[in-house]
Length: 107
Image 1: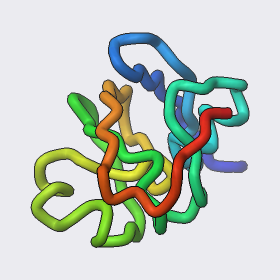
Image 2: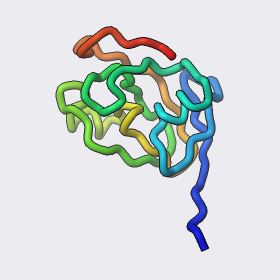
Image 3: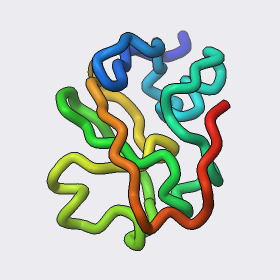
Image 4: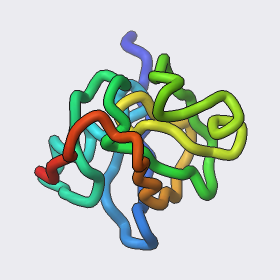
């Protein structure tokens, strides 16, 4: 019997944004739902365009460029949405970086 995949609500800047499955990253879920709240860049953790601050909730983050999110910032809840997977409902705020590799675009 296949393992059930959980889905969680993700809010950005206080607005309900999407349902995100635990097996996908927040940016991918937003794009698939037609959302535009988070800027889109390389989608691989290397540009910093989708930088967010997790205000509440449990999550897992994959490998991200230390240039855009330092270890200290990770400890403070900063992450790249393309590397962020929910383990519970999440509340996020955008946290743009002045070091972003290129001008992000919204979908």
